[in-house]
Image 1 (cartoon, rainbow, N blue to C red):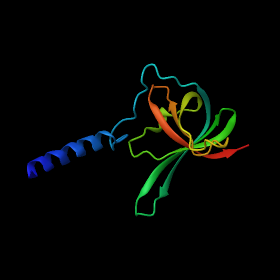
Image 2 (image 1 turned 90 degrees about the vertical axis):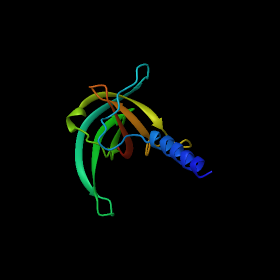
Image 3 (image 1 turned 60 degrees about the vertical axis):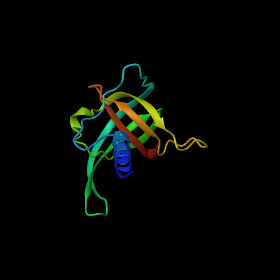
Image 4 (image 1 turned 30 degrees about the vertical axis):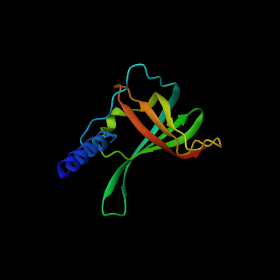
Length: 132
């Protein structure tokens, strides 16, 4: 019985490890063929900042000023992988909407997008600001 429980615990650990998005030290994911990126995004500014998380650690945060669907927005990401800043360039990019928590209203805040970078990698970001 004990061996069965140990084997079952190992199986559950393997399945949960597979469910992680991106691990530390792993490169950005590449775009899958056949996936459409219908939204046009114009990136006009990049900001790299270090923010204190309160737990004694600092996070590297990337902020992007962009025009998304005709609205000026601020996109943000906190990725714990070695993100090379030169992958994300100023100019026009393609994107797709992954998650929209605001189903009842028209605000773009906290929507999650995937931007397609020039080297065919994916940059996942969240809308954290909007301006006029």
